[in-house]
Amino acid sequence: MAVKARQLAHLHSQLTQLSHNLATTENLMRMTAVQAEAMRGLGSWHAGLFMAASKVLGEES
Image (cartoon, rainbow, N blue to C red; front, top):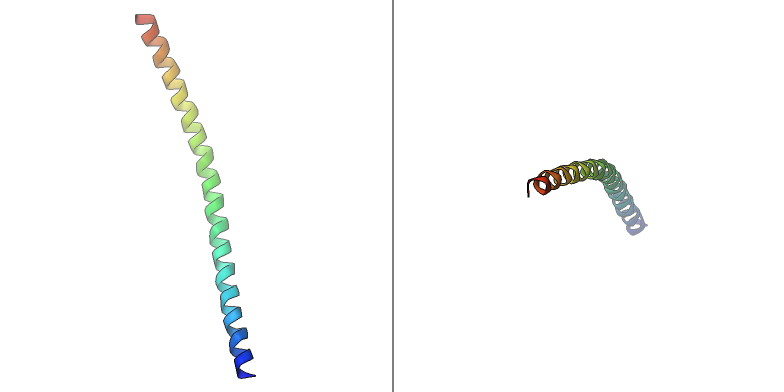
């Protein structure tokens, strides 16, 4: 009976750790989604700069 109680306590500890890890992963995924949206905006901004530079350099030559 003591072995079963120890196994249950260990399982409970593992489940607690799993729950914590899942919450951490969820938070990281949420932050990654925000950062991906910011990177998308940054990419669009850079594309605009490249197109403007291409137009300016194309007019000069």
